[in-house]
Amino acid sequence: MARQVPGEPYARITSQEAYEMVQNGDSTVVDVRNPDEWEAGHVEDAVWIPVDDIIPRFDELPTDGNLLFICEVGARSGLAAEYAAAMGAETSRLFNIEDGTPAWIAQGLPHATGA
Image (cartoon, rainbow, N blue to C red; front, side):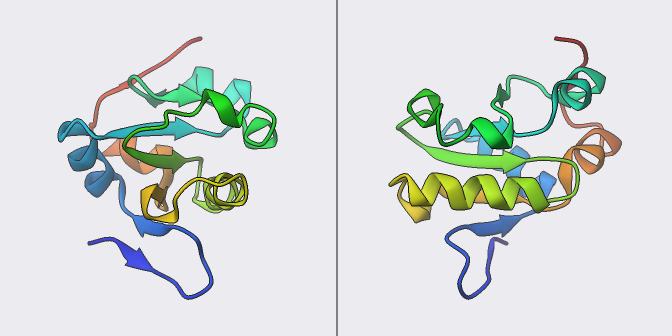
């Protein structure tokens, strides 16, 4: 169940919750890690925008549906969600997959490697 922490402009979810949201067809996973991390393994069909590029590339984020930010352990993805909120994204659309990509892959959820 999505968890809201006071002061955070996003909800926290697990990788399993994120997978279910993606399966519903109304959510996009946004991987905000570095190139080497992305190539080592990422969520299948995720959008890749490194955290430092979220603000300058904000217009590349989908305007419909939920944005599910993911990194390695939930820190950079939380920051990316905060950046998106600061750029005007509705906070009800913003989620941080707090257990990160390693948990997603360890659970056998759809993932890919390489560029």
